[in-house]
Length: 252
Length: 295
Image 1 (cartoon, rainbow over the protein chains, first blue to last red):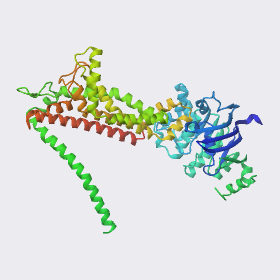
Image 2 (cartoon, rainbow over the protein chains, first blue to last red):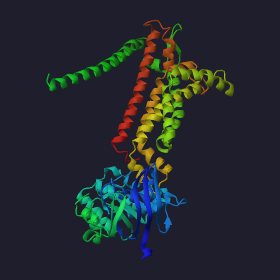
Image 3 (cartoon, rainbow over the protein chains, first blue to last red):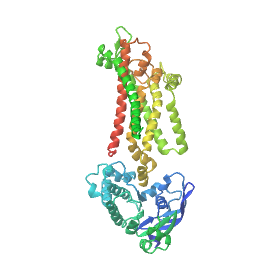
Image 4 (cartoon, chains in turn cyan, yellow):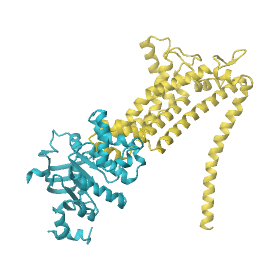
C-alpha cells in the first residue's frame, strides 16, 4: 500500500506574507493515478499544486511549514535543490505558455539544459510530441514559431515540453480552462493516456472534468482540505455535507 | 451647447495643439535646409561629405567634413561599445536579480545620472579624466577620443538601461514560470528566455542611446580635443560634427559660406539621428510582429 505513494504531505501550512493560504494539509498522492484538486477560487488548490515543484519559491514573502515528501525525501529540506525537483516534477499552466521560439526549440528547451547530445534530441522531440498527440499536426512545421499554433495545440505543446524532461509527476493547473470544448476533450483523452506512465495531479474548476478523468479527488475550501477520497465516492456519496453542496452547485 | 458640439470642439482643440508642435518642428527643419543647402552651390555634395580638409576660414576655404563625420562616428561607436554592456547588464540586474531595496536605489541612481547636465559631465572629463589619461598613457593631451567616448557612454547608459529595463519587464511572467518549471536556473532563464524575448526592446534602447550620443554637443566640445583630422588612434583628438557647429557658429559671418556649411553639417546630423530613430522603430516593430518566433 505504502509503496505506491509518491508524494506525501505532512501538516503543511503555507503563508503569503501574513495571510495563511493552506492550513494543516496532510495527504498522500498515489503513483500512476490522476488526482484532482477541486474547490472554489482562492481555496488554496493552485497554491498546493505549486508547492509540489517549489514554484512558490519564486514568489517573495512566502513561507512554508511542515514537510512534503517526494519519493521519501523532504523536498523542502535544506540540502535540496529546487531545480532538481522541477526536473522530476513537470508542470502545465492554466494559460498555454509556449516560448516565442520554434516548436522544436520549445520541446528541446528543457533537455538542452541537461546537456543532451543532438541526435537523441531529435528522437526525444518526436517522442514527446507523439506522447502529447501533436506530432502529426506539427511534424512538418517544427521550425515554425510555436506562437502560430492554436490555443489547444499550444497547450499540448506545453504538455509535450514537460514530458520531454521525463518527469515522474505532471502537475496541471487548470490546463483546459482557456480552451474550447474540442481542445479540452483532446487534452482529457491525453491525460487518460498519460496516467499509464505518469502520476498526474490536476487542479480544475470544472467538476465534470474532475469526475471524468480523475481517480481520486480532494475538495478544498478556505485553505483547508475538506475531503479526499476516490472520485466515485466524492461525486456520489461524499462524507462531508459541505462537499456535497459544492459538487451539486449549491455554493461556490 | 449640445454634448456633440462640445465633443467636436474638444477634438479640434487637441488637433490644433498637436498641429502647432508639428508646424514648429517643420519650420525648424525647413530653415535648416534653407540656410544649409546653398553651400552646395559652392561645393559639390561629394566634396562636402568626402572632402578631407575642413578649413572654413582659409582663403580659399575648403569645406570637407569627412574628418568631422569620422570623428562623430568613431566617438559614437566607441561610446556604444562601452555603454551597451554596462547599460544592458545593469538593466538585467535591476529587473531580474536585485532584491527590492537595491533595485530602488539603483534605479534612482541611474535616473540621477540621466539628470546630470552634460556640461557637468564635460567638466568632469576635462579636469578629472583628461589629466589622468595624459599622465597614465603619457599623451600630449587627455582631450581625445577615448575620453569623449567614456563621458558619452556615461550619458548613454541611463537611456539604454531604463529602456532595456522596460523591455525586460514586459517579458510575460508565464515565460519565466515555464522556464523555471522545466528546471532552468535563474541564469539559464535570463539568457535563454528573458533576453531573447526582450531583444527587440533592447535593440531599440541601444539605437536610441546611439542617437542621443551622436547628437550630444557639450561633451564633445569640451573633451574631444577639437582636431579636424582623421584620427590615427583612440588617443588622438577629433572634432565631431556638433562640436564644430557649436564652436564655429559664433564667429561665422551671417549667411557666409562658412555659416551655410555649418548648417549643412546640421543637415547631415539630422539625417544621421533620423536614421538611428528609424532603425530603432523598425527593429521594435519587426520583431514584435513575427512573434520573434525564430529566436
